[in-house]
Length: 508
Image (cartoon, rainbow, N blue to C red; front, side, top):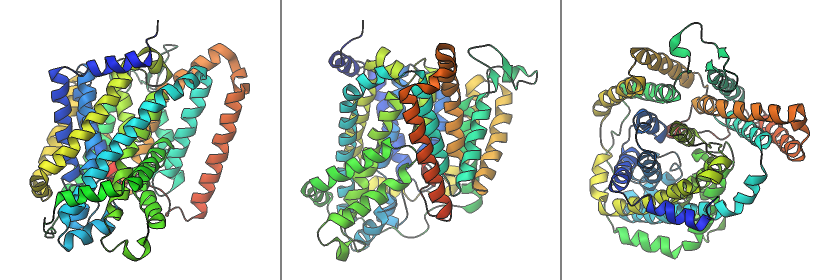
């Protein structure tokens, strides 16, 4: 007997009333805060890749609290680099530079940061509330979706991510196809057939996704730090002004926060857009709708900070809507989160909605609580975090390599894993250098098993007649039309001016 959504929400909250879960949440918030502030190109994909081999051995709720706590806060505290140094922070904070840095140079850095924290916290709560409302709204539709529909939805989403990620859509498709090919290595779950094993016992269960993700995002990031000596060399803007002036600004512009938050939720739901576009869409909306924006935006208008930061934090709620309710990841971070859920024995999508609604609500509660804690951390530790932004690459590179190798070895305690992580790390470095988007490859690898499972079920239940199901026909037509139009637009636009899943958010 299925429990009601109200009971599931109550049970989800009760699940968090454990010291180890709350402690893991606080640790995750600390990790996310450091990731947002440190100017070393350390994005959430790299953090998730390093954490994944460790947390999958924990109890599910404890691991979820750590992962969601980290990703929820990373966007809230991402304004330090734009405001103090004039360089992009997290993946969705590039537009913040336009007005945040001028505010910092004229002595209003604290005001800009206060507006960013408050708008980000409000955006996080709006995104979480949207997720809460989406669960009962989507539940009846989810019950109508079978394996054929889910297969087409995942195929559609993967194709859009492949086309929209990176600078050249054809390379995105190649990377996604290679990810799907890697997903076939090992024993086929339904039939037991061995594929691409080459008589190697190591390949019987396939190559661990956590090791591949760790290699693709860890090794290239560490090599970039060592080779380019990436870091902040210029003097930061003075940390002056009042944080509470920024809070008043965000509360006064509450309607702008709400509008831009829903822009973020929409970007999170639509496949393939990612965090690299959310801040620019929100900034453009504010520039077109705010009074006097044409004269003041780009010169230190606080509304130019509020708009992108609220949208950036609300996007996580949209990401989780499709990730938890449909089982389709919207980016590398949510793809790795699905890997963790699968390792714990949960299948994201309709099965989780039907069998584990209390777990979904636990994730919702964690998301909301982490947003509140992250906002408070930003206010209380603003001075200390500003100093953290000046860390040099010489401190980060050895630590990154150490954690990468330790994380890879901890998966199976097999020395072969070290060879695999180095090999795929080199592959990831050259993929990045030659423009083959790694997010598309990871998404193909993660979705490969799920797509194969849904396709197998569809064929066993309906044969080829599943292609004639009305919902499948509609979805296929929409998928083909959007794919062709998007690909045509990207190729006609010179392949360089479109959306990209940026560097700090797992871009190519």
